[in-house]
Image 1: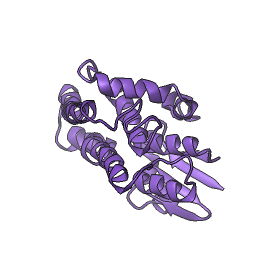
Image 2 (image 1 turned 90 degrees about the horizontal axis):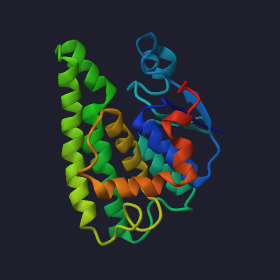
Image 3 (image 1 turned 60 degrees about the vertical axis):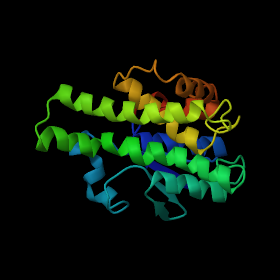
Length: 215
């Protein structure tokens, strides 16, 4: 049995849901509310699964993975088709670099624990916090837009005409950008890729609004 411990609005959980759906892997959802009771991720029952107190956690046959990109790599090895890392070594490295640009350079700066620190420890005002969020998303998106617009390997998706690990990471970050009212007009290439992804059931079913804890 495969179980995904996550939160409906967590972009890291979102990208794993997309990958599970693309691979056709059946899984149970175990919601971990990041705001209830000061954050259920800090409760002992969860920290036993992940001492970092972060979602998601993927439980497979009694073992637990605690980093979303490691989960995507694991799913790729366990279920090779359809591939999230197709092509030769150079293309696979390119897919990984796009995924990592989002997962390591954009997302962590706007993660909940960073925003909590800004607000509660540094006393940053709400409008300043939102400006922080928008700044880092815009900076990352501007670079991705330039990179992908000029990329001859780009098709309907980030790389080619089938979704890859890069698309699994891009779509949740686009959701976050819209949630924080980032103007998307400067990123037509990213928006076109997002549209292609969101036309697929695997992405639709992974959307935060479709999760059991979204109510």
